[in-house]
Image (cartoon, rainbow, N blue to C red):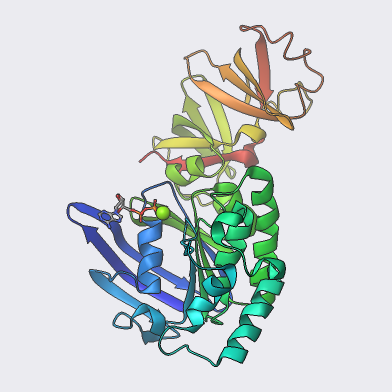
Length: 365
Ligand SMILES: Nc1ncnc2c1ncn2[C@@H]1O[C@H](COP(=O)(O)OP(=O)(O)O)[C@@H](O)[C@H]1O
Ligand SMILES: [Mg+2]
């Protein structure tokens, strides 16, 4: 099933939770809504499910308007952020619940068969008689998924389905949900504030900010070609350096900043000399080692922080004007550099360079 959201607006008193969202979601697509807390993700998903009505705009399923259809006639399966399992019901009854609402009832033997098949698919067939409080977070999560899927929905709606799980289980469930959704070929809208979840699972992803869509695209596009500062910062936490375009020559843009001149690839020919811009530079694009090659984008600053992250280390480098630029190196220290963190005394001078292809030029806003 394909979904079309057309200029959707939803207000709560003085808050405009969803502010003119238009999205086209293709049949069988795993589509993500990604944005910070409070940007309107849940509200948007609830409108798709039919739990609340838009103040403006239209929602179409396969080209048919559904604004006036109640939730049970929309044929969507929803997993709520807190799972919303009924504590007094067994796992079996929780999953079977969707098959008891008007229009979805089916004979008891068929119900048993469908619930059984769903629990099996979730590796939960041995737990049918348990109550939710006798289950781990991950198991409750599977019950919520089984309940959403047992009705054989045309579309699956997931609201931060992994947010209550511990880090390890979250990674496992990412893979499992991705496999399940792919195997079923079901159109899915997945809401999260976790960029890693979105990058690793999404077919396409919409970045939301204050009820509006900032950018839509496959994860790689969002990461490599962010449309603006918000997206560059929200996904991957880019360094944002203010500057001014100095010249555009031979497909390269030179940009003056407070601590030196940068060179970037001029992808769109969009910038004129004198234009105020922001450079977005990913922490992992900074190379903290002396290397041969061109002289472009070579700088040095003073090390102010070393943050050990296990598989990588983050370095904060203070530039001459006080701007702190962050660098990320895989491994425990700077390859070929001083032994760290022992030698990472503040004020060590750190040279670095950045490939012009990794310097993203954005409008200053
Ligand atoms: N039922 C409601 N009544 C009043 N305000 C609401 C209600 N639901 C959501 N909001 C407000 O709408 C905005 C978006 O909320 P929500 O959709 O829950 O965001 P998200 O899921 O992205 O965290 C927030 O400012 C929130 O406080
Ligand atoms: Mg929410």
